Structure formats: C-alpha cells, structure tokens
Image 1: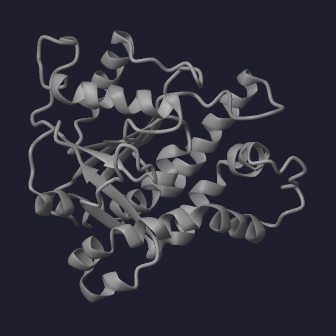
Image 2 (image 1 turned 180 degrees about the vertical axis):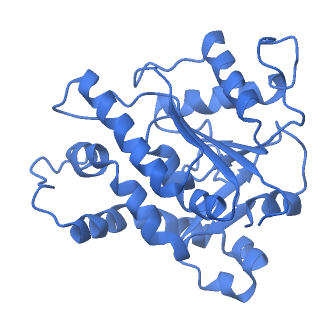
Image 3 (image 1 turned 60 degrees about the vertical axis):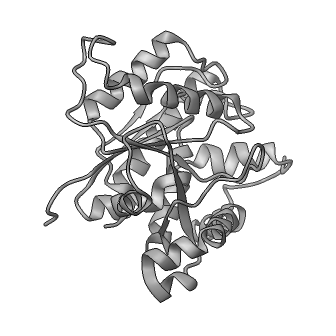
Length: 274
C-alpha cells in the first residue's frame, strides 16, 4: 500500500491528447495506487472527414472511456465544447477552476501555450489562468477552494518558438509501452481514420489491419516523438533512474510551471515517481 495517495489532473484539448502525453505516466501512477483524472476540453466532434459531428462526439466519448478503463483512471471527463470553438472566456475559466477544486489534485498538467492548434493554446491558457484563481475563495464561491494549492506543469511538445520545453521531470514508460499503445489504440476514429487521412493517406484501410499491425502503425507513427522526448531528457532520466536512465527509450517529459505551488525541481520530480 502507498503511504500517501497523490492526485494528478491532466487537461488535454481533445480526447486522446491526455493519452498521448500522459498515458504512460498515468498507468504507472494508478498501478501504484495514485489517482489520475483526464479532462478533454473539447468533445472531439471535428476530427473526421466522413462522420457527422454528432455521431463523432458520441464515438469519441466511448473511445475515451475504453482507454480510461485500461489505464485505471479515476475519471475521463469530456466537456461539451465543440472542437475548434474553445475560447478563453470567463465561463470556461470558471469551469476549469471548478474541476480543479472538485478533484483537489496535487499536480495539474496541460499543454504549453505555444502550439499549432488553437484548442491546445486555449486549453493551456485556461489552465494557466486558473492556477492562481483556484485558491481565491470569493471567486466561484459555490465550489470550495482546495486545502492546498496544486503544482502546475506543462507536458512535452516539439515546438521551439519561443523556446523548447525544459525536461524538469521525465518518466520512463518502456515497461508499460504495450499498455500505453493499447490506450491509444482505443481511439480508432483518430489514429486509423482521421489522422492518416489528414496526413494525406486518403486510401488508408484500417479494416484490413490486424491488432498487431495497428499496434505497429501507432508505434511507427508516434513512437519517435517519445524517443525524442527521452533523448531531450537524458540527463534528467539518468538523475532519476541512475545508470538505467542511459538506456531508456521512451519517456514523457514535464516542465514545472511557475504559476502554481512553488516546489524545487527535486520535489517536482518526486511527485511523478511511483
């Protein structure tokens, strides 16, 4: 049994963003007895080329819940905001704050605000805007403030403008790679329909693929970014895992945000250790 449960809240812009960016860490945390919740700020209703938005939103919700079951999540919440329409409004900020207060996380993680997709950028901005206000009792007074302020963090991306992400903490997920791939594989509408089509593979045929071929496709298309993350964080991985850190292939990387509870880099890294 764990001595003290830690609570992690990940805000992604769309269903599948949390799985990609935090799935490997989430699996290890939940197996160790910690609580992890995913939130998708948008309902995913634009990520297709043939389905109706209404049918797609229903399908993506089911895909997310299937992934949540594999990861052992406390909850996978999808907000009723349409894709490509997320804005930094007071209403949305208050919704984010209420979610944080209700879950009472130790750590809140999201995208950085430098990103190609406006939904990603606005999710990041809403989370950053919530970081201080979550502890202001007269703001959204219908939802009590948490007993302690959470630490806020950014998840890995490959953008370099205005600067690359810092690898303040890194979590290896080589040992749970197959489980993370299974999570991602739940999102069939995205990884085998929308994304191949969006990348120009207009004649991509998932129906003829076996489960193993699907797994290999995901690894070929998405595995490289997490090898890049591991290489970026090599020094951090060695400091965290010792000599084993030099051979880790896949990692999820996190940068400490200055907007939440102040902790040292050492304390930040320990939060992610199981």
